[in-house]
Length: 112
Length: 114
Figure 1 (cartoon, chains in turn yellow, purple):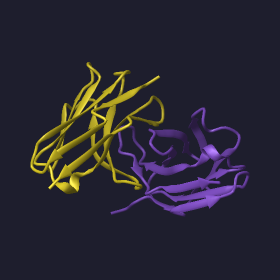
Figure 2: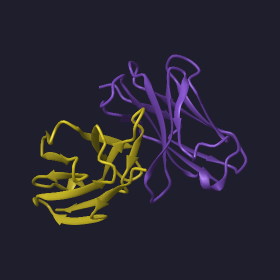
Figure 3: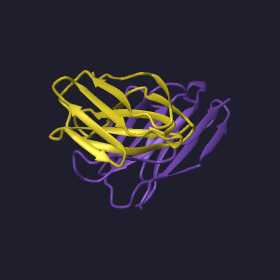
Figure 4: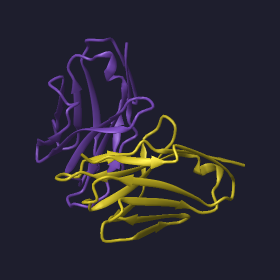
């Protein structure tokens, strides 16, 4: 059964710092990995999807990497801003119809 | 940009009552999902739906739950007799027709069972 772990559970940084969020998964037979953002009490916003054939995916100040063989992904946020404060979730699909297994998330607080 | 919508945003119900949560997936998507998130816990998969039938369900999705696509646009989750532990945020998601595609999530329905 796929298990997804995210560390750290929480992170507090001053504005402007570059930071890295980590995600690990137990079953490396995945064909993609998705990073989401969740604001308090809100839904999930898809940030990046990396296919298993890719090693990196970039969107603006966000860069996600994937190392399938080691079962790891990182989300790099450059020049963090207070508006980046949210919980970041990673998720991998199970076999079949791509139902997702989620990590518990990293709660990020960026202070001005 | 197309988005998944859900209604209601909040629902409060008494234990034992039936609730129906509604979702309108993105119009050209073919795969539909329900997930839930109990406060402070992980987002958990409930059920997936394709070609007018359940394609996969988790152990959470017992006989109290059912899903339906009553018309060409809506996708519903019914909880027949709610329990206190059904209190959670329920998310609908949809995906286009290929493996590897992004799943798009709705804003969620917060269900509180008293």
